[in-house]
Length: 356
Image 1 (cartoon, rainbow, N blue to C red):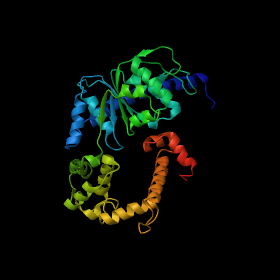
Image 2 (cartoon, rainbow, N blue to C red; image 1 turned 135 degrees about the vertical axis):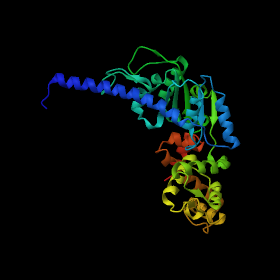
Image 3 (tube, one colour; image 1 turned 60 degrees about the horizontal axis):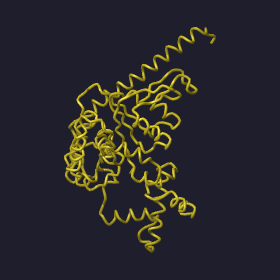
Image 4 (spheres, one colour; image 1 turned 90 degrees about the vertical axis):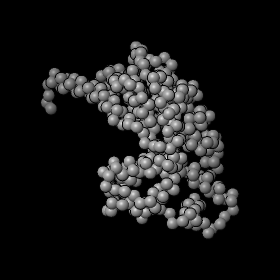
């Protein structure tokens, strides 16, 4: 300050154009990233190869795909694999993490908005669906969408057209939806937290990614890949250490394995990674002691403090409900879905001073 009005308007106009260019650049980079990541997926187990064979059946079809699997199993990698099965290199792949976008912005993010549609909307913005025209849009964690937005996406799938926020002109688009969820949508439909009609629209082709504990034979293959990736081929692992890894349940799946290998490469001074180099939560002295520790944590006491079965079950259930509530940030609807009980049952347990 002071500044000339004309100069200020010229700067604002330039920034608006730059913002629009960045939006289109992000879409282009998403396509490039898809090409880079969609390499043959690692896994020789029968269950994992069966998933890839089912995915290959989608080639040449515009059928929507629903990918189900626990966190860390590689759902986005499989989505990009499905996308790359089609031979057209110019088809866009637009990825959207539905859970990562604030609720007040997600409609604008998906469908775009017109200039002046809300405070700060200085220009028209193209949404993710429009950017995906002629290609695929990947909706990750689609289970996090609220019911009103589920209804709007259902209409988009039915009509193949969108309206930008406060826009009144329909925009025809052609796209395929690849959706992913780490929650059982069947349960959410039963709990009336996810629309049944949208569920069936999405699940034209269903792919379930098995957790790592169901594809144990892939652990050595994945381990070798990550050692090469992070250790540049200079690190190896002992047989006893590998035996521990294949015996571990891997609740965080492939992502947990990858991060652990990265840590081992950094923290292990020797070229051979031994059993005592592994994290303590993987190395267990013996099964009996491990069971004692787990049961003790569940009870909040040592296993020597033996209690009646009913009391044990109640305490375990109470602690697990509290754990799920924390994981779901207090969202009781989502907690009920994970627990496989009705919201009424959950509220009864809470009202009965079941969870403190």
